[in-house]
Image (cartoon, rainbow, N blue to C red; front, side, top):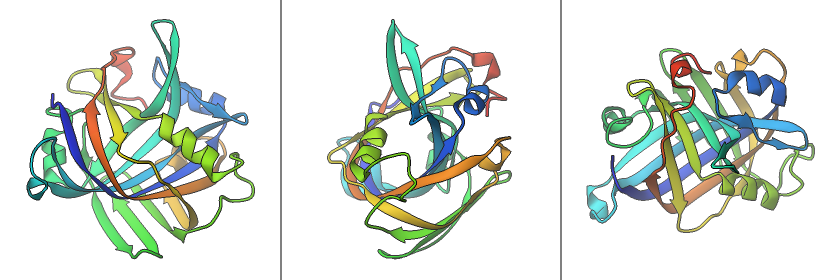
Length: 242
């Protein structure tokens, strides 16, 4: 596996939903359990464009750009008697051939092909991702505050919740294990994002109500991706989980 990759988060939109914890529990493979806020589990959509991505120490001009999409769920688990938190990412889609060839091999997390339709400016965003099975669409614009009915009391609370979960676990079916990818940012800055349209036929599979809570936008963030510690609990269920 790689040591680390460095680049810029050119744009990252996180759309979060409230889910009943008992419902999400049935969808998560062991050892993961839902994190909760105000009695709600949290899951959602991440649409991220990475720019100048390259192995750490390599000149920026060698880097490449990719559009990427993932569904992710805030989780917790026990490790050596201590509780840890992060996100479970059942799949990733990308328009980058490099990501598809290297994901799950040279760096953690298998990546699958997705076609992206992007129409955005600094004030308006409309993004669509289509794969063979999954379609996601998000539209909106930067805002000044969270929705009044959000489970988070402030933007700072929502930002802190996301910032602490820097490790994402995803299945590698070739190896029969979970692989961890850790995000390290040089700075952390989010803006509320007002969603005018959101749909995901993947989230539609959740059998009970799922309710939009809030969305956040990140732009121009220098960062690194680091190989995390892999876990193999529940390996036999990876091919069907989520």
